[in-house]
Amino acid sequence: MPSSTKPPPAAPLPAATLVLLQAEPFAVLMAKRHTDLAFGADHWVFPGGRVDAADLEAARHHPGIDEAAARLACVREAREETGIVLDAPDALPALVPFARWIAPPRTARRFDTWFFLAEAPPGAAPIADGGEIVETAFVAPSVMLERLARGDV
Image 1: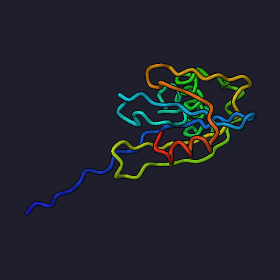
Image 2: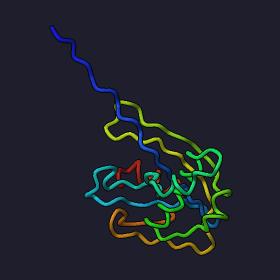
Image 3: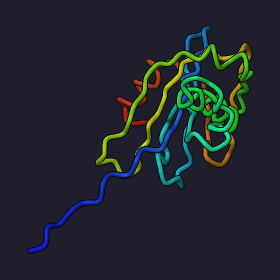
Image 4: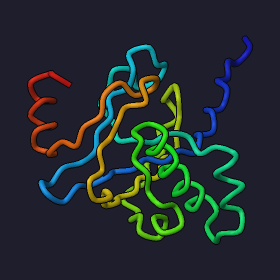
């Protein structure tokens, strides 16, 4: 009887997420994903996405190329998804590594995601890109958790 072997799990794709904090009143930037997306449809998330080839190319001379590329990616993704611009040369060192999560092998779409914290620029007003992101808001974490408990998000 032939033995059945499962293919090895897919290598996780490099990704980055920005947890953008507003000081007064204390809030975090959240973005609602479009309902037609293959991954995370209709979910409220922090801005972020895959590390792309341009991020890797720009990071190639930095020590710790994976982290440097992730820093570039989260700044780029935040700009693309929410319109918030962080001045990349000044912002990259100011990003605080918060976590790194690698999806388990059983996950259908695997990501190796860096999470960074940053302070929002004064007067930052997010605007959803209208494609991937349909709504954005700075929200107090307690408010988002209450909405989650009610099943609203």
